[in-house]
Length: 224
Ligand code: E4P
Image 1 (cartoon, helix red, strand yellow):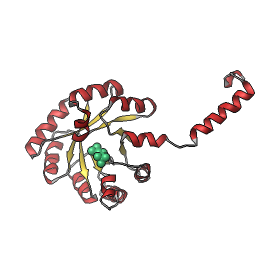
Image 2: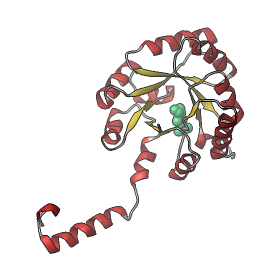
Image 3: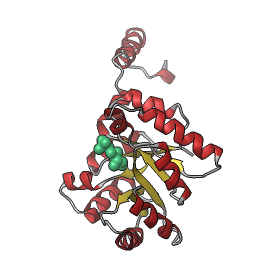
Image 4: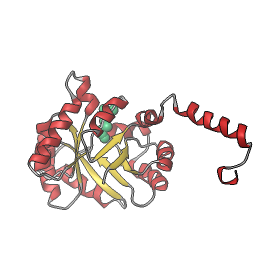
């Protein structure tokens, strides 16, 4: 089942899209939380009041050593929500992921810039893999190509990790990864807004309304 996430800590932004889309949950990172000016517990409480039970929250560790990452992951996991622990897929991070998976904690390997890096995280047991599409593109490489190669490796080696592409700056990047059949995605608010924003939609709806009212006034369809 495809999982749609919003990459924000802003409950008002989440409320807008939770009303009209099947939002699975929220992804955050230390920069997003720092920008919000709120602590994790307050952010989770606000998001939970919007999304309600069943919302899944991806929260990143800030610890830097294996033991500290493992300890922080256990504490994130204990929070009273459906939590996924995000861990950067560095050498230290992969060592922590191996240990954490023995505890049956759900893990997302983040900061993935290459297919081979994502593949190694999958071998360590990461449940989700987050390649940074726009950041890769911005380096002059091919973010969509990294996602395609990673999906191929997962398929060929029968690994069950789900790719959750992140970091988007335009709709085309989103469309390109969706066409690869990824199992999840996280969208920044402004990109989610743009997915709706085709200039021809509202004029088409307005024309239907105009034609109807000319013929039937204020009657509703079933009253005509
Ligand atoms: C995923 O959750 C990442 O932390 C995030 O999407 C990175 O996005 P950015 O490249 O726009 O900062």
